[in-house]
Amino acid sequence: MRKMQWGFLVAAWTICVGGCDAQPAGPAEQFVQDQEGIVTRHGRIEPSSVQANEGQLQYKTTDGRAWRVSKTDRPDGTRDYSIPEEVLSSEK
Image 1 (cartoon, rainbow, N blue to C red):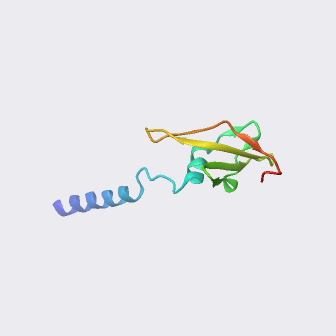
Image 2: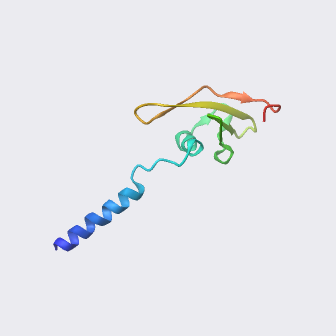
Image 3: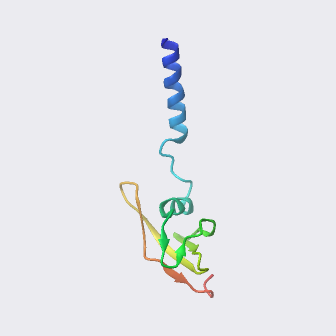
């Protein structure tokens, strides 16, 4: 019985180490996770379009327009994003 309990604890710990509260790999993945399900006035953010570049994130919305935001990490682990700025076709 003790071996079974110990085995369960080891299995639970192994699963948790591999996946509990795992953070996405980078800023683009974090942005997609944070903004999932949000509809802007320009449509939904296209997750496949999100790119991190020089401390900023650039993405497209379903209306075909491109946008840029800056990210600020908070001490509690959450993130703030700036007000989106439209990226003009000459800047892309």
